[in-house]
Image 1 (tube, one colour):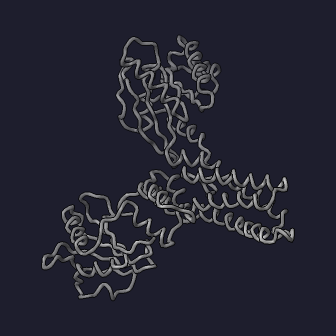
Image 2 (cartoon, one colour; image 1 turned 135 degrees about the horizontal axis):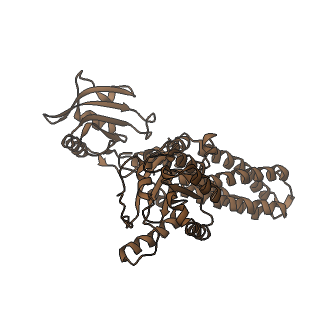
Amino acid sequence: MIPQDSIVALATPSGAGAIAVIRISGEDAITIGDSVFRSIKNKNLIAQKTHTLHLGHIVDNNKTLDEVLVSIFKGPNSYTGENTIEISCHGSTYIQQQIIQLLLRKGCRMADAGEFTLRAFLNGKLDLSQAEAVADLISSDNEASHQIAMQQMRGGFSNEIAKLREELLNFASLIELELDFAEEDVEFADRTQFHELLNRIEFVLKRLIDSFAVGNVIKNGIPVAIVGEPNVGKSTLLNALLNEERAIVSEIAGTTRDTIEDELVIGGIGFRFIDTAGIRETQDVVESIGIKKTFEKIEQAQVVVFLFDSSEFKVSGLKLKVELEKIKNQFPLKPLVIIGNKADKLEDSEIQNIKSEIPEILLISAKEKLGVEDLKNQLLSFVNTGALRNNETIVTNTRHYDSLLKALDEIQKVKYGLETNLSSDLMALDIKEALYHFGMITGQVTNDELLGNIFANFCIGK
């Protein structure tokens, strides 16, 4: 049911600033705005054209609250599809609250989280996946996540799903028609074309499902655990990567007792670096807890950076190899970057020796920031950005991923039924289920609980 009341909320971040924007949407939005607005040219807001700006004052009885600029958007040509006005006022928190309280007294109610975008969906301005992309766009903190959210908000993902759904729906209609003429034993749906369609749908669904692995890491960042023995330069490396003194650096072994995390964007992709406690045998209870957490963080990480002191390789090379094998055996599926730190202390002959023993090693000096860019490039190589570069549809939403998996399962059932000459009525049931899961993505199938869960994660005012 499309609500008819008018809602109000602060559309800009709360707190003091240069300006603030207060948004009103609903059938009576312009009428309510006009009741508190005094134009410097005596304009009536109701009589003004859509997409126009008007300078004046917000007045509470005879008290002037602020000089403001009012933007008018008449439905259906607005973000929500309803009459909408936006009041740009000065950014004092007192002024913001005074204006909002005045509008509440004039008949507005406070908007719920995401209610403006919910109304846009209900009024057909956005489908559900586009609406969800709005939240992703607001929370995007790197180039890649921004690019994916923009592509989805423009309808790239929706269009792909809608096209498949429409083609499947056409065949479903023909299958249903066959059921109406079951006694005549006629076929309206060309089985060969239907099989080709199912193959094409299966191919697209598998591609979209596979893209979630990339989309998920782009959206949430790639966790990278920096591990190694105490005092090999893990904290120094973290500081060099972040270009700031984030972690405590000391020559005392075991300084890092807990994990330290921070984020860095490399080539448009977010990485979450985790500086862990040094791995060694210890009797210190607190340090032991830190080492236990280190292995927990390795478990959670998608990439492991193993750091050692290359200047000590002559003495501890054998022990190092044992530690490396232990990590490789314990986490065989995780990419492992082996880094020899303090390479600025090495002679050329020592460098050649280490490289011959460990060919995949990357030699750096975290303190002097030598080789840090090479490490960044290597980390970036673990991310498959091909789909991103080619502007392909990438799935980042867990709800969409789940619906795609279920749709694929139903499509494969239909395909099997077609290949085994299953009766049309049984195939029709599986087709309906596939259409249902397609509809769940774009919002052609919704319920109040689903919409509540989605829009509850929005900020108020959007």
